Length: 23
Image (cartoon, rainbow, N blue to C red; front, side, top):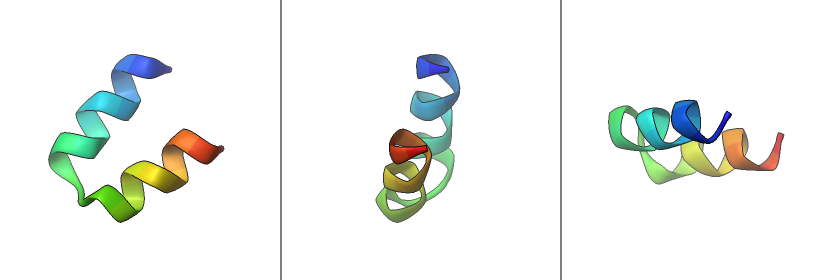
């Protein structure tokens, strides 16, 4: 899970990253 969050945060903006981290 953490890995995907990190990857997402880099690919998408911090806004999407926050959503993923929250879920």
